[in-house]
Length: 522
Image 1 (spheres, rainbow, N blue to C red):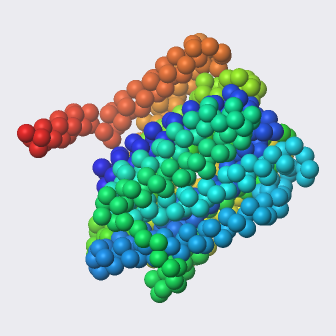
Image 2 (cartoon, helix red, strand yellow):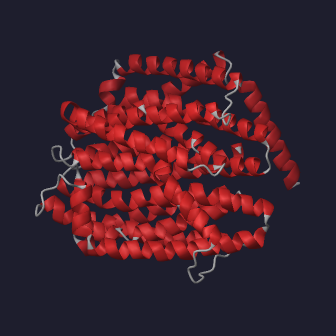
Image 3 (tube, rainbow, N blue to C red):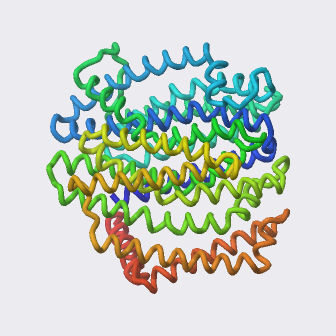
């Protein structure tokens, strides 16, 4: 499980870093103006479908069924089930895509209700959304193939394919802009092109793994009925974070121009640790839990969930506190170029701090939700999701005017904290979650080490490093690197002093693994 966690996390980290490069280009060329707002709305819709259906409801419903079928019924029946699901999914998504293209003006008037109909942002959002919408078909199909590979414990191949999204996106900005005459349109075409590349790579990987998926006549078999029922119930439960982000976008469209962009760039930084740690924890934990549950190994299931909490929190806690302290230097260094002004960086940093407050909760949702999904219970998360969705909407309305662009992110963070509290309470009450005392002790010591790191960063930020990190020029990159390195060092020392991580033991384990690898090579 740790190997899978590190593999998925590593590839996701590379993808997120390339994503930051893509976003830097968008910030430099488009700033935080009307075209940027329109592009973010156009990208939000297919991306929400990807995470809601593709990586959310479909993944949490399909992977447990597929993993259990591999364990109990064998490879051939599992392959047949995967092909049936692939065929039905493509048929259903194609119908949605066609309807979306036809009724896109009406769709945009809902998801960006604050854009004046007939205005520049509205027309641009409709045009760009029609370009990006086919991506939802391609990427949801790709997510299913990823689910197959994850069920086979081939986590690296599935995670690596998503790197191509940002590679293709960066190439499109440079290669297609001279043809389209508009960076926003070039980036939108890059989104759809990346879906073609990702699906192709994953289908090739599945074929090499001996799991070639076939297009069959779409039939609603008993197994597909079970899958659809679990998906329908689990849509909100697994994708609540994405729906909350969509609510944030709708609310932000009513705020001053640029607010959608401020929230987007803040979310991109927040998604770096959330995507790496949350995706790694959820992706590797679900198939492991499903197999423990299928084998009725309850102790193994509890142990896996404890390990996932430990692995996720050791990096999530310092990431959250680090982003709260260094929000302005991070945004300024990464995005304050070209059309993205110092004022844009300062306002986006306010949104980032609001997101960072809820980062541990966002990650823990990914760790706790599989406790229900692995047992076939998708109804409970959806009830929790409906409640927190309503709470997020109410909080958005309360916070949007006093806090402007920081209101929607803070509302999402508070809703996520409530979500994870309810998930943990219900799992524990049903006997499905037993957090070991050692895990609680380790997490508490991690928090102390992270607080010590934050105090160190606050003091350093008050010196010459802080002002340097928000100025123009290469010195701000050096200043931010020094601040981050100091934070890492302070956190590492804290972990060592508090006994969370023994450097000698870690080095001995690393030497042992290298020795075993050399032995196998020999």
